[in-house]
Image 1 (tube, helix red, strand yellow):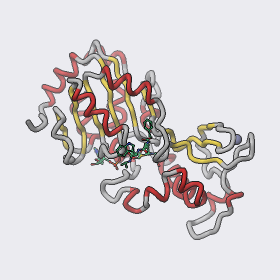
Image 2: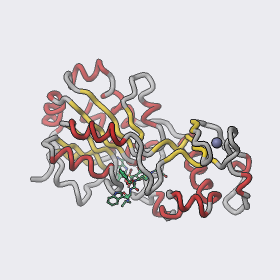
Image 3: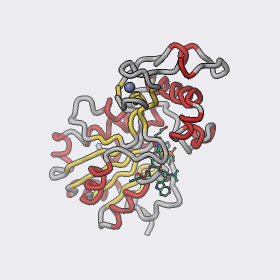
Image 4: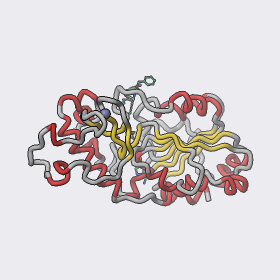
Length: 266
Ligand code: BV8
Ligand code: ZN
């Protein structure tokens, strides 16, 4: 049976839910001007992910990887949360949930590394698990120290250079504690995502899953909604386009999530 588009029916299910998990991807931040990865001329269509988002790539060419992440840091620093981030943040408000989902607990599991959801939740208790880390964090390859920093540029060389200007590794960001090279504080491919134990426990209990703006191609995040559906939970997808693997969903709200989420949730 094709997924329903009945918002009133969805709201009836929302009202009786006990454990809500939202799984978000790059489409959640598209309206904030952050390029997605695979849709509409996304990042990975102009860059080869294996060349940039892996530990091996960083070891082979830390300058290239830092140029890529520096550009993305700039995009994030210039961005602001959009209506979709705020619609999910409202779900985190106890007073709001008392009105629409009185018995429910809610957690947002985001694959995004832009921290825009955290900024949108600023005033509310932040039930957000950033499973792929944060782009505005740096991680020391020597002592493991992690720091959240909005410094721009992170080092003079990245601020002045256009992509043609050579940068020496010594000019890249280095740890003030131990002097080792810093890397972006994100989870690369073949690295283990954060908060897996907490996420697995949430997925096990979830009776309602909102899947927002993700192509569901990156694991383990891509498997959570299926697991919740197999456990008898309800899955509602919010995506600008149908994907070829969403017939298992109970609801599908097609369109920009910055429009569909406020319309369906608020
Ligand atoms: C791991 C941080 C071992 C870096 C990222 C099983 C099968 C196959 C492969 C694997 C598997 N298990 C593991 C793998 C390997 C790999 C993987 O999944 N590969 C894929 C590509 C085949 N996974 C890993 O390596 C993971 N680690 O598995 O460790 C392990 C695991 C568990 C326990 C023990 C050991 C680590 C993956 C993390 C990689 N890091 N990001 C960085 O950002 O630079 S992934 C990257 O992709 C981002 O985080 C991004 O969020 C994520 C997923 O992409 P999406 O968010 O979905 O974005 P995309 O552009 O693809 O889609 C956007 C969607 O939005 C589209 O559908 C579009 O239609 C829609 N949209 C657009 N605009 C809007 C919209 N929708 C609504 N409104 C709009 N306005
Ligand atoms: Zn260090």
